[in-house]
Image (cartoon, rainbow, N blue to C red; front, side, top):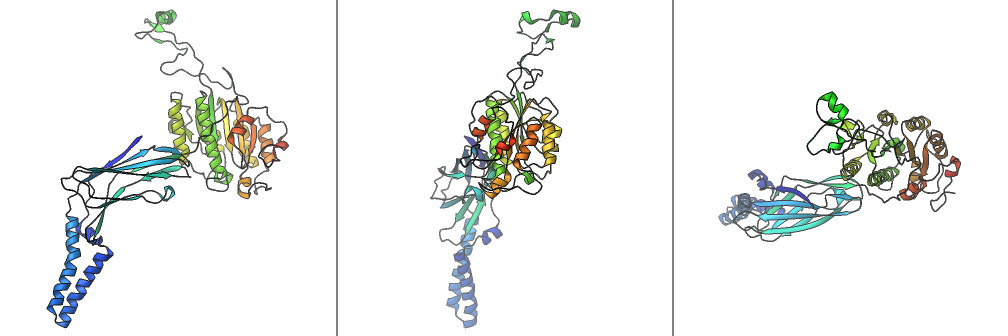
Length: 455
């Protein structure tokens, strides 16, 4: 459970703002009183003047009394949980406490929420005694990923006659993060994945608590059997050897976010499928002990200092997964024309490369082919964006793009294990297919069965 922000005493509106809070009833009384006063002068009726003064004075007195109200109310908001997957619900609890010595009147609470999360929740609280507390709750859900602000919480005060209403707002807001769904994937060994030192595994100096080949100074508690006597004689102090340990297999997940490569929009679009697949792949590989980073076509890399492409070897798997999910929650389609930004980040020795491509022309397919030379093994999921926009069973492709069979052929000739993705395909089935031998004939992937399998 994540604690939301806590607001202090609401900001007090000025008298001018209080006059602006007159309701329709209050404005009607004020207008009627002024009209009666004018008529009393025109008709010479002093009794009518008294009636007019009474009608005009009542809403003004209500405004003054409400403006001078000394309610001191504290409010807080709690989200449970503050990070949810798409289409999941989160409960928001509002807590109001009367910290003054006077009981309150009827209070109406309203919390500001984005339209995508549903209508604004409103609650009416009866008289709250001095020192009393009230708690209310509501649920929010979203079919679209993103970060959504909740608040500020508004408190509406009204007088007993309904002449005036004042809205006072707390200053604190909270954020609900809606991340992509993480689908479970089968624990299969991907094509080209190394099981030990080799092209899929990289050696790097160990971090704190791990061993490496560079001797270091003796520390209290080190095993004397690890003293490196040759280095000790050379440096004149006790030196301890740190033996090499196998490091985690590295994996880069490449997400193609180009708007031109993913036609269509909405929860069922090709781009949203790719985002969900990238999130599921990252979580699955982290659970299997990989050192994973997320890379986009713009060259942005997570984790990594300033997006320069570090794998973040010292990051805990849970922290790395949370960081990637938070990044994918707000990732948007880019205006990039090609994949050169991602290619520049791939400097070689990448281990396993898992890519989710959109529509590719010949030039971008060639760039993807050069990417293959900078990694140990490569698996590509190629999304047919036209299939999403034209619906199942359609044929054809956009101008400037090559047919799906040609895209697969170009990638496979470059050494990729390339799989086509169409509407209705599940990542789990494709992930299992990625563990098999690389198809030799790309044309066999161009024809789809109605059930979503291969023909």
